[in-house]
Length: 243
Image (cartoon, rainbow, N blue to C red; front, top):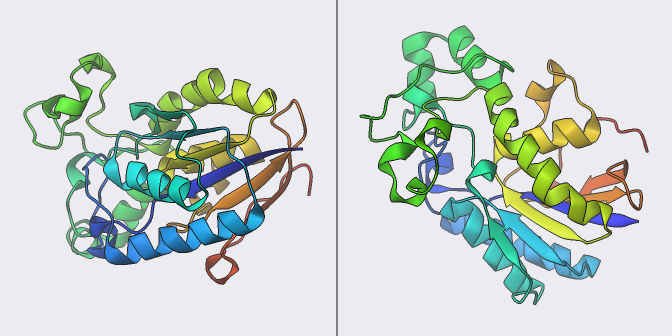
């Protein structure tokens, strides 16, 4: 049996403010740090020995990973940061309060932008402060690859190939990994691992700072069991072939 742990970062400052965050590099709140410390205690109790970690370019995920590695005393393991694990880009919704956005555009339109598989919000151009081309973190990335908006489908088109080429081989080789990322980039991984349809993926969620422990058949990506470690904040998981 091989184990994989997926963790959505702890509560961020813009989670607390109910704002569309996307690629904006906000930090954790005090509550977010507390969530991650609880997660670290739960991982310690499971006695999981991680071989490597993966995370995005965004500090809320990076800080979450480092706090977790501190908890389980695995600071020495290799950690890879990659922009392709970033959150979905919310285009012109970035920075807006979600309730104010509903009031302006209507619940139905906002729900389409948030939860449809292939309908992105309106895009921002390279002259907009929220376009990644204006962030020094991405100066070595081909500007043509940097999004001005994304649907979940577009997010999948960058996350899944990276997972398949750079992460999955470690899992197939039997290494225990921890991936700390974001609600939508992790939703893509759940869609792939659990075989969730384009329609049903909108209902898949990961609570902030609550590790999802996945057991996989040795030498494969076949899920045999999965559970959230913080049962007090657990939500339902999609069915999988092993269960």
